[in-house]
Length: 499
Image 1: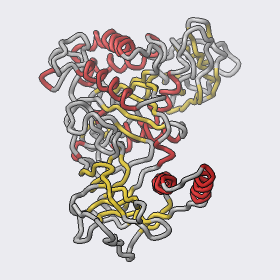
Image 2: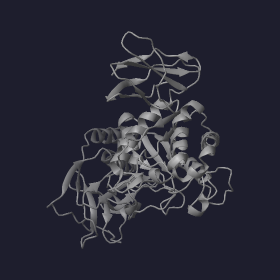
Image 3: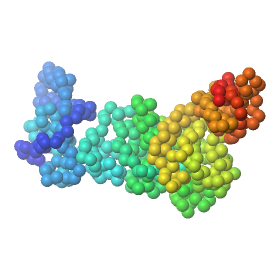
Image 4: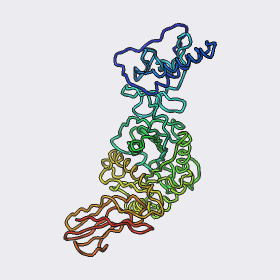
């Protein structure tokens, strides 16, 4: 530890390749410094009039405070005293990281103008790609850091005061992330994660970087997930709130009894022995909500799973519904939106996979405040049709956000509205009709066709499952096609297209 006593002068960083940036949080540091000086000054005043004059003087100085930070980032400690230093407009260091002790210091002058450094936080290497090390404050948030490319990060004081929206991520490998090629995603202010309990970083909020710290094994080589693309889209649409991801998936797991040998089971009724992934996830989510502090709220649960349960496909819908009900009950969130993602359309596991895919698509009809997030075909990893590529998971992440919003409209007692973007494509005599799910509660879509001027009929239309958003029919000439949304209250006005 470098110690400063008496009138020993502080070392100043070399100019060279310094980065000059503006930081909103330095205003608070300047205020803290001046408040310390004010206390010293007031201690020497003898009358109320002198006290008032001293306070006015401090107030004037604070209003005029403008601070420019000068950073000297290095990936590893250097021979000098500082790894990272901040200087104010007067050239005085206000915050710094000691190069030898790797300690973050706040530097405040005392009444004699002598700087006495005090430890203000903890510096530690981060086991996430993109960071060489970072300084965390008492809440675990990154306050200062150096990325592996040598650039400095100072946090964002305005963002740090925003309340959290908490979103739980559960399921198996495509939720955990198997996307190739692996992507490095820099931290975004206001996009954070609360690691699983079996990770060394558990118990504190961290910036969300790949790989997210799910329950299952994660390394940089395991691939990229959909959680961060989802969270970034969420943050863009909700700039007044931070998002806290709770990553809790584990690859090759399911509801089936064979799953514990592979890491755990999503059967919430199984013993709480460490392998009950559902119980673990709920516990992690509760801890995240507590850590998130005042104003935090649970705003969504995302589920991507199914490949591990093709052997019990006939039971899958009931088990998924039971999980949805149980998780909502445990988190005291009966109406929290729950989104079910589609397995890779290029390999769903034979007949069992088709059954599970139908169960996924029909979930919004069985449970309120749920939605289905479709997966584009042909976007899997090379040679691996089960696992979605990095690009596919980026698309899916944004799709999960759209579905999360749609789930909020899947509520009882509201009349249906028509589906969106109904379109028809002809290949020879085969007409394929597709549409985007309606932003309302739907229990079925009725697809009908007719020759121009003829009578509407559903004869010859192949459309399954009921909430599927594609249908096919055979027609030799021009046809009109219409799609009608149906729910418990009635039918919407049909949406018509031609082919």
